[in-house]
Image (tube, rainbow, N blue to C red):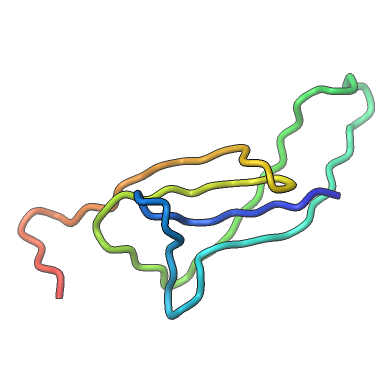
Length: 88
């Protein structure tokens, strides 16, 4: 078994929180090698999470994924407001 962790960070590396809850997911998974695949081959496993009601302010963010405590992927993105939009 492996432990998977996903967290959302600001561009400054701070964890993003909503209503005092950090936007993060952890869980365990196990991935077996199908017959005919050579040992050591890279395997893909799709995962899906829903963050209902997540509203982010304008700025830069990054999703970070770790497996067994080791960073394995990250994706940076930016949230922008449409021209002329006034945030309340």
